[in-house]
Length: 326
Image 1 (tube, rainbow, N blue to C red):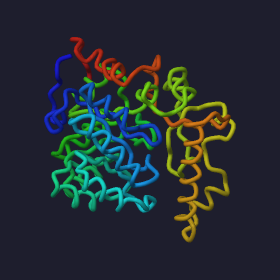
Image 2 (tube, helix red, strand yellow):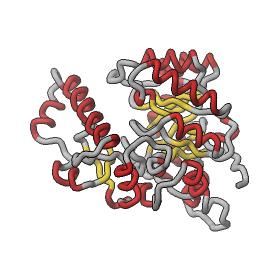
Image 3 (cartoon, rainbow, N blue to C red):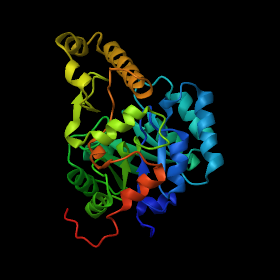
Image 4 (cartoon, rainbow, N blue to C red):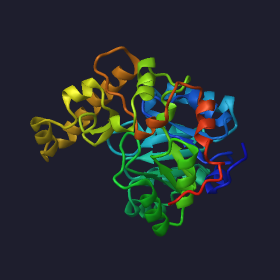
């Protein structure tokens, strides 16, 4: 397929303006390598690795398999007690780009920019986009209300337009893309690329269970719901029978503990830890407690395929000469 030229493809030297989004528990080195071979790029969450040795090994595995750019997602807030160590490793091994989430990226920008490492920052509105631009971010990732995981509140096109009117740095749209027609729509709205996650869960290379992958095939956009039970912050999951049974809202005691000024910090940390353990258990083992994180773009997942095929399918429609309204 013909190369698509945008600010993102020029910046990273890739063929197509697609980032395989960093997905907690799901993303791994093998997926990133296959994405790079297919002409896109991808990022892996540093928190997917329990130790620094495992994290370093994954980065070195990617570097030994491809000379194409790839990224690492770093959680910036205080809940990530490994941030300093993870950042040091990224700088030492010269990871091509960093995606920052949940907190101020100032430290990461200050340490990465002098080393030539690009920094892309997750934002959910134009106010925060301007803040990270002023800090020196190379691009923003506009997390909209159709994203998987911790989604934003603004529709994809509206968020792109708001940020492009406010900022001069490139905007990468996250959420709402499951095919080439939607990719074309985001680019037409002013984005330089897209971040796509959920379709890649159902890949041959993903390390999660077949049940998780099959759920992404059999469920659709209408089955995605927001829950606060995993981390205290609204997060998208597939509305399985188990999710229906336990509900998506915190109970009265949980809400009280999260609102108490003296203990809410610790309550949030415990809630987050328990929620991530629940996701891990469902992702890697057979359990009736099926809490699978995914976004509405699973609507376009009809089979389990290799990363290469998913990438090619995402581009279908982009090259068709069909007008795309914004």
